[in-house]
Length: 626
Ligand SMILES: Nc1ncnc2c1ncn2[C@@H]1O[C@H](COP(=O)(O)OP(=O)(O)OP(=O)(O)O)[C@@H](O)[C@H]1O
Image 1 (cartoon, rainbow, N blue to C red):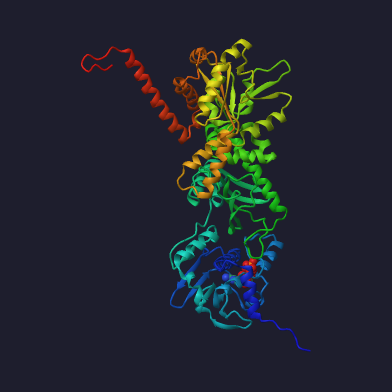
Image 2 (image 1 turned 45 degrees about the horizontal axis):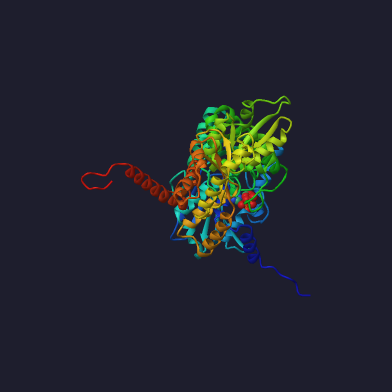
C-alpha cells in the first residue's frame, strides 16, 4: 500500500513561519540561547564575565552570534540542537532545580532555533565546551540532513558561534541600525553586554529594578522616573514602582504627564519574562479601567506561549492583573494624601480617563471617588470636603447643589454666591454620573439638588399675580424681538439674587450640542454631506427655545417693564442687547456666529447712543451741525 510522506523541509518552514510571523524574532531567539548558555556556565565558572557578540558580514550575507557560555559537545548537538522540540537548556535547568540550584534561563521548548529558518538559507554552529579538547561544527541548510565535523580545539574559543546566512530576500537584517533596534526591543535587559561589530554594549543590560539600590524608596523613585522618561517620550506625572512577591514581578508603571485622547484602547505595558521582552505595548494585562497607565513589567512567573509572543491566561496572569490594579489604586490614593497639588493636576490632565473609568468600573470608582476633585464656586473640592461645608438638616441630611452645564458656570457661580450656596460645576464628562452614584450610595445623608431647573425655589423666586401681569408685555416683546433674529426664546419675569444680574439664561442639553454644530459649520474643511447634516441638526436645535429669566429687581428690567410700548422697533436693540449680555455672562456660549451678531448690534447701539447725545447738544456754531 502506498504511504503518505512528509517533506521535512516544508514542515520546518511552515512551522517556523506560523509560529514566528515576525521574522525579526530569530535575533531574539539566538540571543536568548547565548544568554542561557552563559547563565549555565556561570554556575561553575563565574569568570570570564559573560558577553555576547553580533557580527555582520555583508559580503557573505551573514550575521553571527557568539557567546562565551557552556558550549556543546557531540551529545548535546545530537540530542538537543538537532532535535526539534528537545531542550538541553530546559532539562539542565530542571536537573539543577532538583538539586536546589536556581538558574535564570529562558529557553524551555526546544524550538527557538527554528525561527532562524524563516530568514536563513544556511545555519552554521561552531561550539566547544570550556575544558574540551575538541570543537564541533554543525551545518544545516533547512533540511533533515546536517553535517557534523570535529575541529581542533583552537579553532573555537569556549562557547558557541551561530552563523546565519540570510536568504537573498532577507538582507535587511544586515543593517546595523535595524539590529540595534531589535536588540533594544527584545533584549535590552539581558544581563550580559551585547556588542555589535565590536561596539557596545548596545543593550541597557539592567533596568532600575535590577540595580542594588532598588529597595531604597528615594533612589528607586529617581531612577525609575529617569528610566521611564527616557524610554517613553512622555515624562511621568506619577511613577508606580512594582515589586510583587506573588506572582514575582518587578518593574515600573507610570501615568504620563500628557493624555492623548484616542490613544491606546487600554493601558499599555511592555511585558518581559525573565528579562526578555515577550510583548511590547500589551493592552490586555492591565485592568480595563487603567487606560491612563503605561509601563514595563518583568514577571518570570508568567508562562509564555511557544512563540514567546504572548503569555498564558493562567492563575498567575489573573493574580498579576489584580495585583497591578491594587498597586495603581494605592499609588493614586497615596498621592492624593501625600501631594495634593500633583494629584489634582493628574485628575485635571487625565480627567476623562480617570473619572470615566471611575464611572464605568464600580470597583475603581468605589476606591477613588472620595478623593476625586470637583470644581465648585469655592475652588476644587472632594465630595466629603464639600459635604463637610454644608449644614445638616435635623434629619442629618446635607444638600449637594450642582449644575450640569459647564458653560453656565459664570452665571451660576454669581447666583450661588449671592445666596451663599456652595455649588458643584458638574459640567465636565462623567461628573454628573459620579455625583448621582455618590448620592445614591449615601442616600441617608445626601440630597442631590440640581440647580439648572427653572422652578428651583432655592435660586428663583416666583412673582405675585400683579407683578406677573405687569411684566407680560415685556416678556412678549422680548420673545418677538429675538424671534425676528431667529433666536427662539421663552422669556419669564422672576426675582433672583444678585440684583446686579439682569437676566439669567437657562438651557437644556441643547446648548452644548448647538454650539458644537455652530462651530462645526464655521469650519471651511467640513465635508459637504457632513455640513448638510450639521446644518439640519442645528435647525432642529434652534427650534427648541432657551429660557430667559428677567430679574425684576434689576433697574434695567424695571425700566423696560414700565415702557408703555416695549414692542416699538426703537427698543429692539435694547431687548436683543439684554439677551446678548446674558450670553456673554455665560462665557462659553459665544459661538462665532453669535459673536458677529453681537458685535454688529453693539456697534449699532453705540451709534444710536451717540446720536442721542448729539441730539441733546447745542449745534456747533462753525458748522451748524449738532
Ligand atoms: N548558543 C548555545 N549554546 C549552548 N547550547 C545551545 C546554544 N544554542 C542552542 N543550544 C542548545 O540547543 C537547544 C535547542 O535550542 P532552541 O533554541 O531550539 O530551544 P531552547 O532554547 O531550548 O527553547 P526555546 O524554544 O524555548 O527557545 C538548547 O536547549 C541548547 O541545549
